[in-house]
Length: 58
Image (cartoon, rainbow, N blue to C red; front, side, top):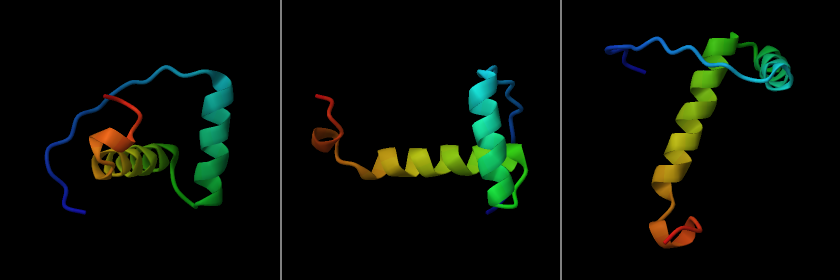
């Protein structure tokens, strides 16, 4: 992926969520920030591919 301008964002999350992300990142041989970016990117791609009438919202 091309690297363009970036923005650093601090996120507060429950420890339970952090530990789950940490475990999944380790399973995928990724850093935690890299794994979070992957999950967010996939979520956005999924949301953008669902037609509005099928996402449960009017």
